Length: 66
Image (cartoon, rainbow, N blue to C red; front, side, top):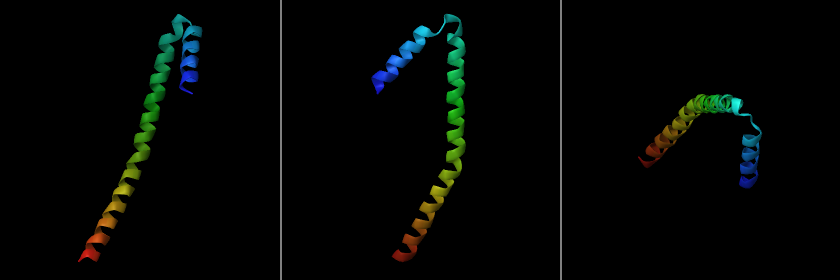
């Protein structure tokens, strides 16, 4: 699997004209930034929900323990 990815990247690098390397790099950077933004936005509410679950569990344990 990893070998196939490396071979594909090498093939793309060799097939890419020198004038488009910078543009491709910028496109990849924008994609990475977009993915990171989506992850941060998606995990914000999820983190709050998980925190609430742990708070509820802690309250339940405290009330049972006395």
